[in-house]
Length: 347
Ligand code: H2U
Ligand code: ZN
Image 1: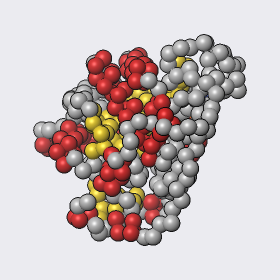
Image 2: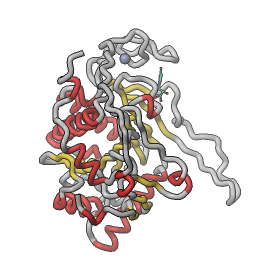
Image 3: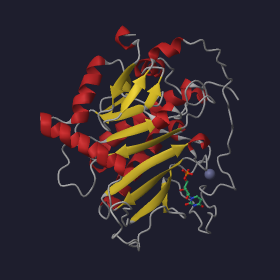
Image 4: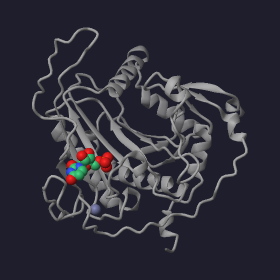
């Protein structure tokens, strides 16, 4: 491991402008860690109590069809509403508010209650990618922002193990996306180059933080990662939005997701929790060339299936901090078996 990162230093997140404190020397602390026995929780393929399983009744009385492909429905408890809200815009400069319109969708990735993305067939993951594309296309015709995301695992506040994600569309660009938008635009105006393409090319050359790649996609721990095993998923070609992926690129994305998420599960031999989501050019944007489509994966686990990193104390009050370096994290993920651990362990 390169010795240039042996002492405390700060790294800049090019997308947000925020810094992270890296403290590599602390990993030399003695760690009497447990080696946990893999948890082989068996879930049924169909759970009569699950509100996402085919044919079941949801909380507000709607009945899911007997779906066999990814199934999307309007969230029964949406955070955004289609109708113009009644909020007054004449608030004082010190108490600012704005109306917002939008829609919230839930997507069941599979009719199978017992699967997660890395355990699904590549062709079924590709169907999820196509659903993301189709919904982004439809919602992008009405809203400027379409946030595709997945919360996985109860530690992430996910309410149901049935494989599913969400899409929230809104008529305004949310804060984090706007920050990324401005960072990419500023880099492009001052250098004439695309920020994430330039960054990606350097990472692919240095290789230290790249975990895995295929012909179209690169799965890396970003230089500025704050979560221990954070991932930035980047395309190797220029594309601003998920809707612009060709069928072949969507297929190779499914292959990349299968491999990358399998490595996640294999790390602590557990169904690895995370929040993930896609960022690309907003739909209302006049110029999109400064954008590169990408996905962030933010997993909370640090040392085992139960020991998670807390963003508390210094992190809440000053800035994010990590001990294990992104290079060490990438190295660990890279060295794991490529087949899912559940296929190797007898129940
Ligand atoms: P999480 O997995 O992140 O908890 O999200 C599940 C979503 O599903 C959540 O936003 C919605 C919740 O509002 N939901 C329904 O739309 N219908 C239901 O019957 C239960 C849950
Ligand atoms: Zn289910």
